[in-house]
Amino acid sequence: MDVEGIKSKIREVLGDVPFECTGFEGYVCVNIRREDLLKVVSFLKEDPSLRMDFLMAVTGVDLAGIEEGKGFRVLYHLFSYTHRHTVVVRVDVPRDDPTVPSLAHLYGSANWNEREVYDLFGIVFQGHPDLRRILLPEEWIGHPLRKDYKQPDTILGFPATRTTMMDKVRAARAKGKEE
Amino acid sequence: MDERLDADTSQHDKDLREMVLNMGPHHPSTHGVIRFILRMDGEVISSCDIDIGYLHRGIEKIGEMVPYQGFVPYTDRVDYLGAMFVNHGYVMAVEHLLGIEVPKRAEYLRVLADELNRIASHLICLGSITMDLGAYTPFLHGIRERERINDIIEELCGARLTYNYMRVGGVSFDLTPGLRSKILDFLDGLDVFIDEFNRLITFNEIFVQRCANIGVVSKEEAISYGFVGPNLRASGVDFDLRRDVPYSAYPELEFEVPVGRGFVGTVGDTFDRFYLRIEEMRQSARIIRQVLRKIPPGPILGKVPKKIKPEKGKEAFSRVESARGDLFTYVMADGTEKPYRVHFRTGSFNALSIVPKKVAGLMVADLVAFFASLDVIAPETDR
Image 1 (spheres, helix red, strand yellow):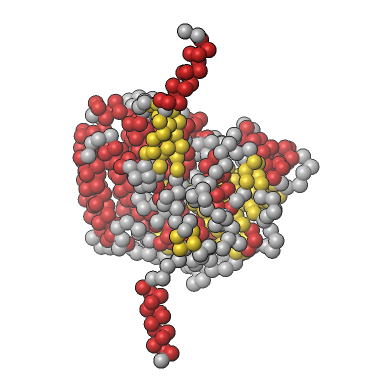
Image 2 (spheres, chains in turn orange, cyan):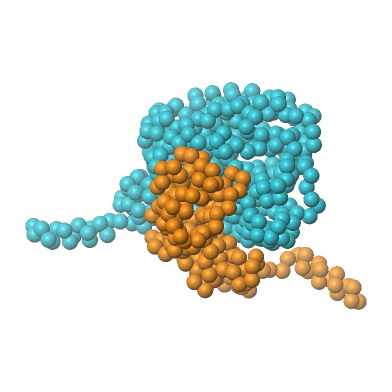
């Protein structure tokens, strides 16, 4: 289905609710509010002319470096094996309340992909059956892919940095120059 | 005996009988470091939890700290058996970001490198399945053939494992003069090897019994859990990115897409996933022969700006059919020389997520066979 077709389809579900829809070469990008996420994605999945049955990826982005005061963005790349078209659904969430409804009951792959975003960004997926850290140890403090994450001096009791041979060489050179 | 008493003790018995077994992180069949936490009732698994992340190196975070071109060597480390594909996926995403055109010759060289790498990766996968099931010799035969591919790729780009071959806008080296005949020699040998491999192990009675009807993944489950590549096709979904969402030089090449059809058991069982990879190697060989015939002369690197600085807020994604299926790469720019966000979603990650659901009721030995046939590479899941 082409850009206009997909746009009018989503307009059908959302009614008067404002949303952004941009067409790119080969795919369509939709910006929606997080309240509408479940409604839109389950429609995209169930509608026979759309059938977005493959959740390609769940990507988290911290928008702090793009625009001052912005929160996070969660991207869902959806693909249809039946019709071979791609739709990207984007949801922006504020920094002080990073929650998004979970899609784990719609797509099996959402389970682990959402756990990964939770682990690295601290975005909470409401209704997720098993929201735990997945890549980092459970005792880890903070969420490393956030832009305001500061690497601690020690991690789980181990020093995060260590002096290498090069550090010693540099120190010796600096000392030599002084003298 | 009193019935109520009976009911109480059965639960109590079950609790006593069940044992928690840690399989891994260092277990010969996990091919890397993955930990299965199995709840066992005798030999039978009643539930399973997977602990991954032992090989998490924060590659996505590193991506935010190095320039666009400088990140290519890191992408090799995402998947050490299929470094070309991750190279390809990343440079393609950056090219989408900049709108760079890649010269034809470079596209053909990329396909050549990809397909050689695919054969190498499948050889390891096939070998390790048989090794996990107790046959050590086929693994060594696979390694021997892969060594010849390593020699070819070494001559092409100077590295045997972490290739760093592709560049934004093209590739780093052209074919060397004698390489064409070397590759053709290898392909002739590969046909003989595949027949020999089939005689040696594929249709071996014991091997077939260990694989057929084990770990059956239905079409619906495969799609829902985001299975990709050979695993998806083994479950009966006729989909290949190279043919259906064409990229690079694939539209100009002819090949077939093998699909699982229950070769000896059910569609989507362990044997299907194994046999499909053998078929895929034949198709890869066919593609390489065509590439060598059709490759046009010309430059191998397109016009790329000295400093790559895409516009702020621009984003792009790419999909590449890697040896473990659809590799998704996402890149976002913030107007500086470094990517703002890089994300990889790899085939192994999704494939592994179905294991806890499927293994309840299987024996540990069947878990080993099922898991090996998914071709999960630990660094690829953890990044």
